Image (cartoon, rainbow, N blue to C red):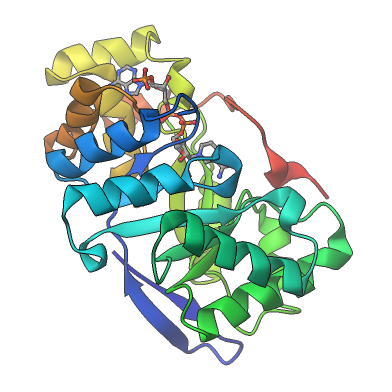
Length: 278
Ligand SMILES: NC(=O)c1ccc[n+]([C@@H]2O[C@H](COP(=O)([O-])OP(=O)(O)OC[C@H]3O[C@@H](n4cnc5c(N)ncnc54)[C@H](OP(=O)(O)O)[C@@H]3O)[C@@H](O)[C@H]2O)c1
């Protein structure tokens, strides 16, 4: 899928290709856990890894990429500026450089502001810092995460390059059509995090029935739903068999069950929700 940044006069710039499916590595805190999961994913055919400074495992992502023997250019790395570091222009530059070092790479494919800076006055200088990282070539694309429609609209006041991606929680129980539309309205793609609602709802009887009718697993239905509504998605698993199962969801045809999946919407937030903050 192609991502790019819309400018004030409506042109798109800094195009970059992002694989629509990847491995999320949140909550892989045991030493070696993240590295082993990344190696298993790369072996299975994944080409996109989503990490963050807050996950404390960027170094293991970097180690896995080196050990895999794959070319850096053939793997897409997303990482994120930690919320506590999103306080000023120079802080962004400093932390971007630190992520480059931890990942042991010359460039980051996609760098995201992990959540809207809590201090509203920090939002413009932080985004200017992100734009500087883009212009310097340290990162190939920049975006945001956990931005609500009002946060995105506010960016029109200060952004030279609007974000290429908004990473938000999306799954069958939290479908967010309005926020997806607001994201697309500024020229950004939606990246669906927690596509399995962190595993909280995989025993939902409606989901289990759909999976039985389709002859696949409940997790595969949830992941493919996020994919088929046009999102990039990044399910997390530390287990090799699930890493393989989750990738295989791309081969499942869920079109006959879209209505049943859409009916699972219940506004369920599995983790945090900064999109509703001021
Ligand atoms: N930007 C943000 O604020 C934000 C917030 C949350 C997440 N994220 C990103 O999105 C990624 C995914 O979200 P997430 O980690 O919150 O949750 P998730 O991917 O929705 O769910 C992960 C949970 O589901 C389990 N699981 C995975 N595959 C399974 C399968 N096939 N069958 C049964 N259970 C399965 C995992 O356990 P095992 O590991 O034991 O398999 C884990 O407990 C994160 O890793 C992170 O990269 C971003």
